[in-house]
Length: 374
Image 1: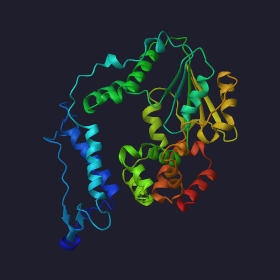
Image 2: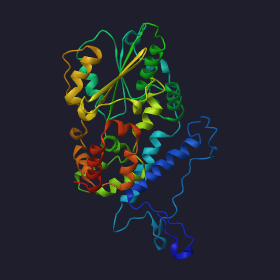
Image 3: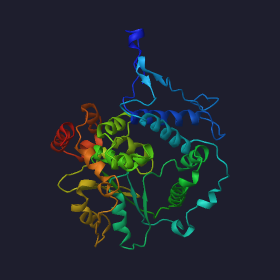
Image 4: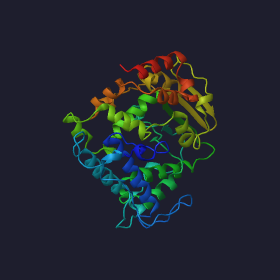
């Protein structure tokens, strides 16, 4: 944090991280960014970024108290800012660093029998994370259907993602199993012929609840000791909210579908004739068939919708992979009770897909809830 107004006002530029969490988030992001641009793993860099000679990040001052700029222990945070600095560099070090071994992609190939032959009538569950897709996939798998059931959060540009993992991750083995499975699925999809029919299932969820769920599910990657701080009552929920808003840990629904869904399947959700009372909508563009659910309606309409769409009976939805039942579930519940800034709420609901799948009355009620807290 730096405040130079007393020396150079009114031309001063005031920088602030406000809390040690925000400082950690900024430093972690900055460390990753310069590490990638420096070629820390010996790889070539993007043509859009000038290479840096070494992965250096400058922290302005240790104890420039006169300008409000310091990371030394103080009465307010004690050693927390230094702990956050250590955590940020630790996190960055797991993402960027020299790779010491050669990775053989054949070691991570999906079993040949799983995506063998020509696809006939597969079911593809493709959607954003934290919308209930695992529960839907499990419900379908319990039926032991003859055609494969594919579950994924993205099937587009898989080769580029694999290349990025090999280039930038010091331990790409962590990410490669899922990426290689996606590659096997794409290769299998490319073997489709004129008889193949694709049955696509996707799910939309109210965006703020989904974003908060994603953040809480992954917050330990960003703040490794957050669980311990929670147990010790050493976490200020407002600090975490500022952290969430500062690192922009949010995704608009339309942006995800444009990037990950539409390049694979030729449907635009914003143009579908969704009816709230029915709870789902179907569409067809040969050889693709689509059904779209809302997370909020899954228990009510999943069995009916899949019966109409696929002729399936006996669908049972189980409550699994719920954020409120995970180790940080209490934090998720507290997060949802906070009042949220008008700018953030407006941005998340200024989305054409959201306005198709949620009525104006529903959005008005959601706005009141998130703006006022509860």
